[in-house]
Image (cartoon, rainbow over all chains, first blue to last red):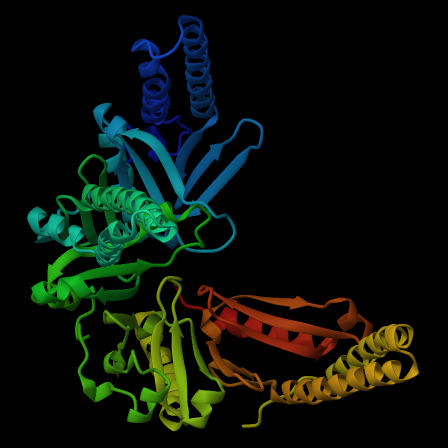
Length: 454
Length: 153
């Protein structure tokens, strides 16, 4: 598994190509979709035979083009690990030379989409901090053993250990029950919207027969029909979303290894993520409205990352979950593991003064803060409480702001930024004097925490 | 400790820009008023423009006065805002890089803006209206402090 291992000479500093089957794995799914989309109507004889032949030619051409692009991309991509740097050279027309200093590695993920899994391949994704290029280091694809070896070595180097250090074993920490995961995914606030719409349709349908002949009656029926089609589309989209989240978080397990937390999840596409200790920028606990009767919560975790260059889908995938769904007890225990000493939920003792009700009537009952030498915990939310835990040693800047209304009430908002870019520790509507004192206190505590950690 | 303020030149620059643009606006509105409604319309148009300019002048003065920055032992504090007060504290150890920018008007008045960047996107620490030499000095000082106190993300 070490640098001397015969499967991966790239780890010893020799330029290597990715696995020869990578083009196939890369094209696989999209090719299947294209063939199915154009091929099935052709074969089933839905169209004239001449049109069918034309379609077939198009399919073959597209397939060849996609395959050719993938092969060329495979041919021009090389990678290696030299010293404490991962180097990737890629691109036919625009040459790109990517360098990832391993000291800045925030997390290493192994992702195996369905086609890659069938071929025994996996992608290694290196998430590193820092500005400049908007890219993560992606090695798509390596054989499963190579991927594991690469991850082990990158993490060892990221921790400043010798490259040959074998991957330490992980102790199972927590696993999510699949039944509960499915139930929790189905319980979404969006269903309430669907219910309301259905009620509207029913009312419209009930009202319209009364004046069936009149223009108003017809208008009602038409409105109901268009609403109905809207509802069907909405439900389909919602169903897809549920399926995607179940697929993504299926068989969720967390292991604790000396080099970090190991997360495994996925039904069709397997993901294997490792988050080194000390790279956690913030932890968040959410209790969605519909989950509260069951006492469930979701725990998320943030590492430093570049601004997402790609779409929302990708960003969503990159969010690290500590638990897609857990009981409050489990959530407390998990938070105790990653943020020892920080409370998972806050009491009203950290609530802002009562006059904040004027500024935040809907949010007031959740607003609260707490801090000690190491953690700042803030709670916000209108219909569902969201608790954000920020390690003070990770604080990037502290902001104090107040508008005219807040000043009139002698209140101010305090925000604490980290490099995670996702969540901000928000202490809203605090007393002005308290907030000003808190700024000084928190910067002092953050300074001390940084000293200790360095 | 006292907050340090942007250079008074910044106020001169703001006033010059405000004065010239409101004169131009008054001329256009006045001419249009004269053409459409005669001499009285022109006078009213010019009057409205000047009143707007005066109101803007007061707001701009308040905004100019609200800017301030403080270099402490371990961090930089920037405050700003007339209606919405904002205060940002950036520890020197968290600075990723420091930018000095100067637009065309700024360059005319020998001014520059110093901006601090941290690893967090939300950080907004900007000090406008410094003399170019002061800005360069501040940048070097901040860079040196950042270098000395830098800590890992």
